[in-house]
Image (tube, rainbow, N blue to C red; front, side):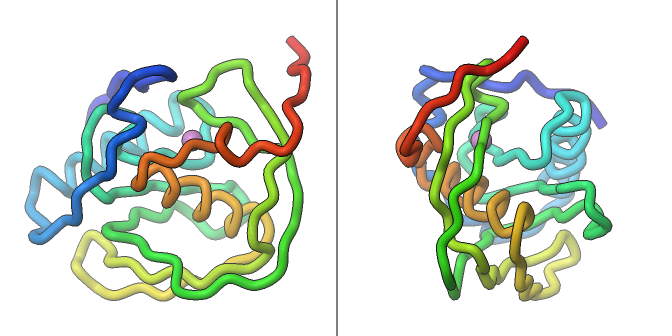
Length: 154
Ligand code: NI
């Protein structure tokens, strides 16, 4: 595994629509491992492939609440319920935080690294992280959705 360089705003790769994975090959599995290592090294709770400069629909998430590490291939939100405002940041926007409204509850379908279909029903921080990371795959960044920016304390 290797730690990759995290791309930060205004790197144009962050605005590109990522491509669907058609075949789960060994390089894709290694890429997911690198993404996880990069996320943990940066103390993040989620990372999408475009954030390391790769336009593929891959996401890793670990919100540190007992759900463990999720490695998701081609994740899609199939259901959303409710709304909740909370503070978000992003590894691609160091030093910036703001309040974002997200669905309170989501259902996400994805493939795992073995090609098995997953259906994840999530609330709270996991639901938020899923929405934030899946946005990255479409070039949508949290700052686009911020309703109020916050002063970040050092
Ligand atoms: Ni982000």
